[in-house]
Amino acid sequence: MNKPINIYEAKTHLSKLVDRAAAGEEIVISRAGKPMVRMVPVEKPAATLAPRPLGIARGQIWMAPDFDELPEDIQRAFEGEDI
Image (cartoon, rainbow, N blue to C red; front, side, top):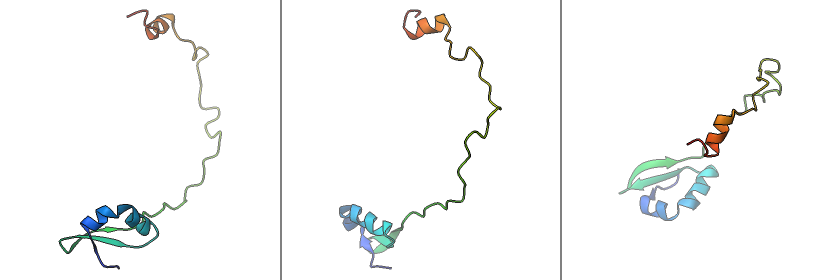
């Protein structure tokens, strides 16, 4: 572990500190000489889930034949004619 960095210096150099932490370095930020927080890289999630196959719900979903038809009164309301 490196020497703690004071909070003022951390604010001034935050971007560089984030880069260092992302590269694997542990950064400790202190206030008044007392360690307060530790910056470490975020762990990448394990790729344990396999991609879902396409068409998995084929035959289980039904659409009404008039699904795309919009009733005239609703269409007029959208166009501002029936307010």
